[in-house]
Image (cartoon, rainbow, N blue to C red; front, top):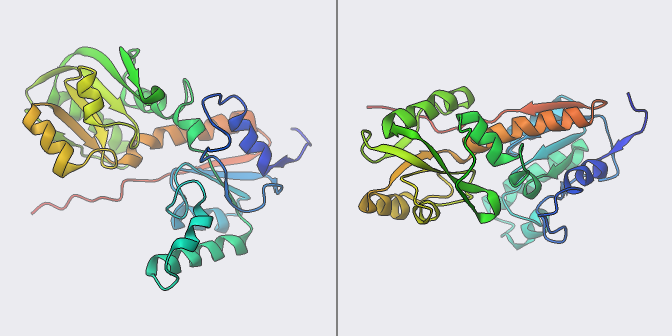
Length: 276
């Protein structure tokens, strides 16, 4: 075990050092809150830096939280942008309370987004493909590699959707929304992660079904267009498509920093289906 202390900034540099696709001046991969020079012995890895993850990290003595998505609901300069909010608003009050809780705890929060979205072999899209059982290489890719068309053996839309649901039930989404005739035979699959792509990208790629999420595809416009166009859609929660990538990140960090305690904090789709 190495006796060299690992600082928070060392971990950020570890993710960025080989990420040639990332513009360091503009990247979202930065410290959100906390001291970058803090010595780190334990890291909690999570998809969302929400209160549940933050409280778990603080209550269990973690030095650092690595999150993929924002902590305060903004983009790059999350805390700077809080000043633009009305200080009397409920949103500002809630975010300020969260900020104070984190500051008092001493927790360091690092966001790792751009590097992991496009990380070859083990990043978000490769992890999602592996999780749902797509082994084929992409026929074509788009948006700098965060979406692609994957050609598979022809299968009924209903059977393909079921095969995905059987896998996603393990990470909290036991049902998927399907648009199109379940008996349609599909073989040209458009797949993305998070809000990385839309059905329009996949239609242009010649796909006969798009596997998309609730943050990248809108029901009243995109889904209606798909219905009119006769394009099949399988629709999932944003977090479900990226949870496998965060599990992979946890293992990657653990393998490269064996001297650290590294744990994954799981997130589950919070949407519940209530039937009449």
